[in-house]
Each structure stands twice: as C-alpha cells, then as structure tokens.
Length: 339
Image (cartoon, rainbow, N blue to C red; front, side, top):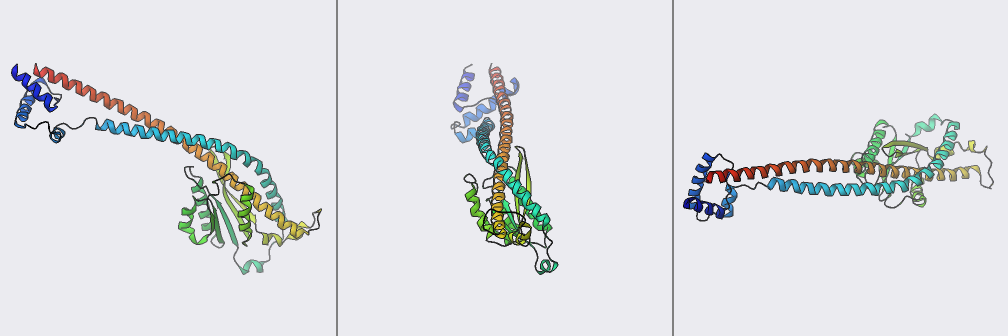
C-alpha cells in the first residue's frame, strides 16, 4: 500500500494522467512509467510532458476561434444588408421618377431616326464609324456580378465589331482593371467616385459636357437596368451622335416653336438635354441595381455564415463530449488499476 501511495504522489507531481487501458495493461504501463519517473528527477519539465502528453484541447480551441470569426463575419454582413436595403429604397424612388423622361426622349429621337434619310455611300466609305462607349460600373464591390457583367458586355461589343473604332468612357472604379487589361488603348477617360455621393443632375451635366466635346458617330450607354431586387439586366442604349443627327435637321422644321431660335439650335439644345437625361437615368438604374445586388449578396453571405456556425457548433460539441468521455474512462481505468 505504501508503494501505491508513493506512486500516486509521484504521478500527481508529474502531472500524469493515465491512458484508457485495460486493468492488466494499466499495471504494466504504470510500472514502466514509474521507473521512468524515478529515473527522471526533473520529470516535471514542460518539454518532456509535452512530448509524453499532447494537448487534447488544441482542436477545440481552433474550432472555438473559427466560430468566433464566423460569428463576427455574420454580424458584419447582416449590417451591410440593412444598410444596402435603406440605400435601395432612397435611390429607387429617384430612379422611378427619372425613367419617364428618359423613355419619352428616347421615343422622340428614335422616331426622328426612322425618318432620317440614309447617308451617302461616299461619306460612309471615307472613314470607319466611331462609337463612344460609356460603361457604368460601381465604385465599391461586394455586389455580385453587377460589374463583371458590364465588363463582359463591353469586351464582347468590341470583339464583335472590329470594323468600328471604339473609345471607352468608364464611370466608376470597379471596371477599370478588367477593361484596361485588355482594351487599355481604347480607354479615353474614366471618372472615379461617381457614386460616392447621391447622383445628381448637375453632376451628370459635367460628364455630359465632356462627352459633347468629342465627336463620334454614335454613343452607346452600357449599364445595369433595374428589374427587381433579384434581377438586373445589362442594357445597351445607343444614342445617335450630334453630327449624324444634324444631317437630317430638316425633319425638325415641321415643328413650331415659340422662340426666335431656328430649328437647328433647338435640335442641338434638345440633344444635349436628351444626353444628360439618358445619362442621369443610366446612373440611377445602375446605382439601384448595385444596392439590390449588394443586399442579395449580403443576405446570402449571412445565411452561409449562420449555416457554417451551426455546423461548427455541432462539431465543437461532439469533440468536447468525446474528450470528456475519454478522460472519464481514463480516470476510471487508472483508479481500477490501482485498486
């Protein structure tokens, strides 16, 4: 009995916990380890204990840290979803009010284009047509495929119309890398932080003035048109250039005006207003699509974080219960071996 008491005290000093063995093998293991303890007067050394007894709770600690990080990410995505929903309601209200003006002007000028006389073949053969592409993207990410779809559409437009000279104006910062990497030579100008503040008509007029200072046969707006919260459609809206429109200004003479200006000047002013209106509507449509896509993406991310947290919690509880059961079995086996 005195030998067993001494053995127990030495095991407590060394921090030893017996493994889950049968009573016979436990006695053999205890006898061998007792000789090791007697031959190692510094058996309490932490390095020797770590080699003999690996930490069993390391995996649980890693799972606990992962659960904490996933929970934090879930809180962030949930907050971003609420912010995007609030911004969506405000920008959608302005977008719905601007759409009738853009549709009405587009119908008016499309009817004029149908009445235009065809261009002479000599003028068409002098030079290749030139298109000015205005790609509207966002300044921030985490909004699904809103920006990548615009980049793909512009690339396909240039690839399918190689006989046309294309120049690109980029509104927003997220499409810069995708377009500059392949079509850097076609980049004419880009505007950054367009959506940093709410889109306003004076802001759009400054961009329209830069567009009007360039001469192109056709202007093409590429943007995301808002359909619903879960649906956004990439839209290509062509606008006939002012030079081509002035070639058929005679069709505008049948209208009467209560001013001393001639029809050509009225047509120029109306074209400038139409360009600013279409650009204003395109920016609002894209801003609404961006917030809707971000709200949907953050909602999906929050759900994925919740599902992952549930899976990690289940795994943590299982491993914790298994570790507790293993230690209880080891204690009972060691106590039975010493009796």
